[in-house]
Length: 597
Image (cartoon, rainbow, N blue to C red; front, side, top):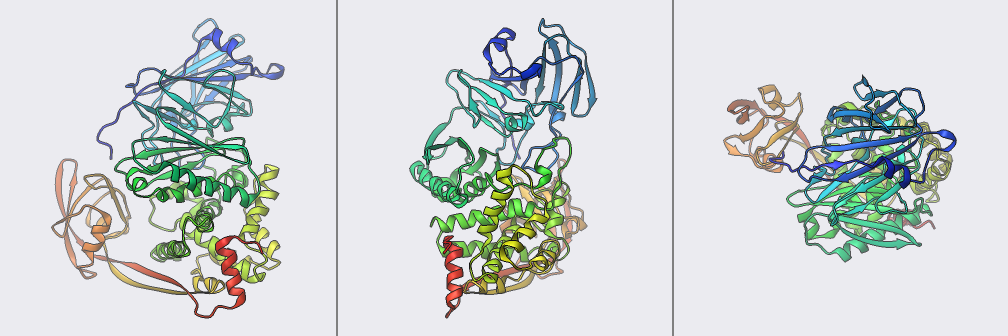
């Protein structure tokens, strides 16, 4: 995927005396106080050099651990595999004994009133940010960089970023008195607060006196002022929706990639890191609207309205929940609602999005066998490239159905908007996580109507979703058709040489002998450049036909004969009814505008 990469060092270093005098946040009642410092030295090195200073470490053994995953990205990464050269010293620089006690833990017995640990870690590659380092830039995502003191994650911490003179630092953390020094209430806050270091453009607007900062890194010509107007509309709407601003400052970290077709993001409580396509952004700043609206809605849904299992993060194990359809999928639904309600999208664009989501689900054969709860629970094994049911896609559609069924059951007095506000008021404001059954209970209680059948059939179960009935409540007609077309199975390939990064083991390609990490060169003697081109090519052949496929594997061209299989192709059209009732029009107006009357 990457032909070459450029590295540099983020050195976390300090002066013993400097740390002692620099920070005013010492531990209370003799409790340890923890200080991090990060400095960029050599822009061509391969590792982050990390040092952590602990004042008042006590006499008992301490274990420093590296997280195994990043909250919001539900996959085990084992960041400790990237760690080398772990060492520990006391205040006088005397080396202390270190014992590796687990794959992610290092044990140290303190000596005196001060302890310093240091290590090197190779930066992690993330899909939403790609390479974390180049010669002008560093994105520090905490869980992949910063260890924690086992059993002490509740303690406050400070961090200092030391960068070259022409570099800037952006962080959502509380600044201290000296330049580029910040304070975190605890470890969770620290690693939930990414930092961007280097050369970037910084813009800002305020909502009710609260600053919202936008940090851009990467080359692209785009309408910055229009981008700011768009983002402010999104933020103002969602803040008004929940009637609160639960942060003192918020930072959007945007990284712009030339030559990239799409983007992605990772949410944090007071910030988000987002990757954007430079070409799409230059053509239209609204290409960034969906991911911006999605990540900002996470300020509430998942970061504060969160499943109970995520109430206290355990960085060592998979934290499984059945409710990612709600945390992520319903967030995707409100991403789309935000855009139509702010008039960044027209009604037609919003309906186009709903049509596309319906088609995507109906083309997933897995929908008949796998519930969205199971997908939520097993994302750790399935991964984000799995071609089956997606909790983003089906969760968005469940949000649509719940919203319209609530409005119909209550003559438009109650909607999913009310459920979201209730969940925020009852759980987020109390800083407690919700039991998964609380979603159904909240829906039924607010509607004064039993929704247990809905959840049993469509959330826990695999019944086909009733799109036509639900959309009829808002005065729309749905035409949903499907046909079987030729297919070689679910396959994803990327890069200039079409490296296969996902291949369904039930696919015709796999049955013929093609494997993941092969390079797909030709199908039916035609060079293949994109997945859409492959789909169009297969339209020329009948189901059951046998086609030659050429691949490249470990320096050798190989040929296989593949028997063409089939795939369901869906088409959905949503159109307004000719003569909707007054209630249908009221539901439609409330749905599209958010009007509470």
